[in-house]
Length: 116
Image (cartoon, rainbow, N blue to C red; front, side, top):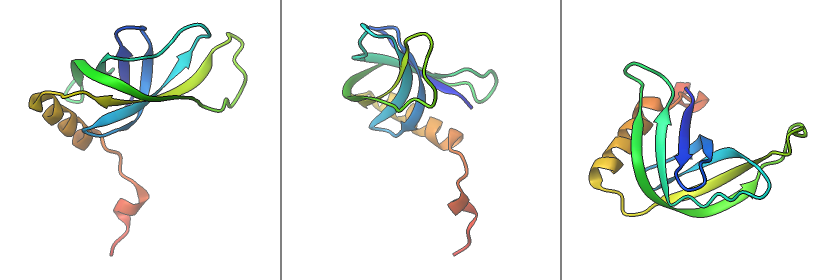
């Protein structure tokens, strides 16, 4: 299920790649001349029904912003980048929402099927 991050200050929308209760990493398309320095983000899914998810105005700080090697050159001058953020003193209710989101949206991995 696609889940996204919206950066309030630079209006970037990105795809969540990794998430935990302390922060997340997302990939986005970068246009030369723009910057991605999120201070407040929204986290959401684009589905309806019981899997719908939305956290609004989560304070955060950028930890890194790196280029992702391109699989194919972009004809629009866009570059794929990965940005890592840490949440800044989120209220306990938001941490609980993020934890619930992680549990409900975790994908099964091959190791989950192996017996010990």
